[in-house]
Amino acid sequence: MGKRKRRWHCLAGQEPTELDKLIMYWENKGKLVPTRDLIKTPEQIEGIRRAGVVNTGVLDEVAKNIHEGMSTLEIDRICRSYCEEHNAIPACLNYEGFPMSVCTSINEVVCHGIPKATDILKEGDIINVDFTTILDGYYADASRMFIIGKTTPEKEQLVRVAKECLEIGMEAAKPFGFVGDIGHAIEKHCKKYHYGIVRDLAGHGVGLKFHEEPDVDHYGHRGTGMLLVPGMVFTIEPMINMGTWKVFVDEGDPYGWEVISEDELPSAQWEHTLLMTDHGVEILTY
Image (cartoon, rainbow, N blue to C red):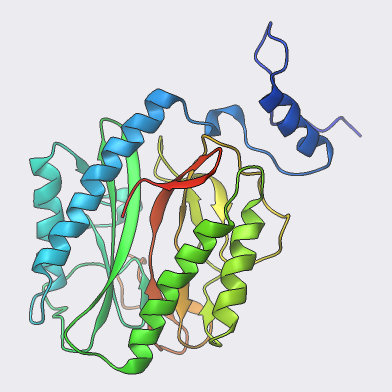
């Protein structure tokens, strides 16, 4: 058998740094470690941070304007207009055939809901608005839940617990911990409410591309998955279903994007783009 190819390499002609030694220690233990390109430079981090400011502005603009009786197509127009005004690009637009600039996922739509003139927000709806910004070649990604008017206590709890899952996942993300620590913490909290954590979709690395390594599952075991190293940028975005974790793609969606909970019970999701630092995560998008 051939020797396993290393993911982490010291810079040519230089002695290994303390960071090199620590990462190689875990790689020698059989753990999955990042490649060097996943550790963002200070310049790249500042670029991603600027994209995050615009992305937060987009969702703030949605928060100011979202209301009962509006269509999700109007939400798309708000997002697209804000992006254009700030010299940014909506990353979703035409991404692998996705036809709009934002994902608007109502009630049982878990994610990737396509804005439409015929999707009119009603009293009691819960909706996830998920937007990704490209600014000067850098990416930032976030989503928020909105409750339209007054909804049921069950939906209110689902939205709250989904946000708690994001916060608990962020607390579990530590430098030189592992991606699995995040999923374990989220799963433990979610199980208290007998909710389902979607397993078919995950958080992901982001920053120089829309989707990078690592995959950030929202369930799992401590000490598994990729080693988390300062300088990595990734999302945590747990999708929490009121019932089963299983999902399907709507056959009526001509684009093949909209993901729906299998039992068609409501789903909720919150998402931040996060920078791993020496002390924990820094939120780059809200």
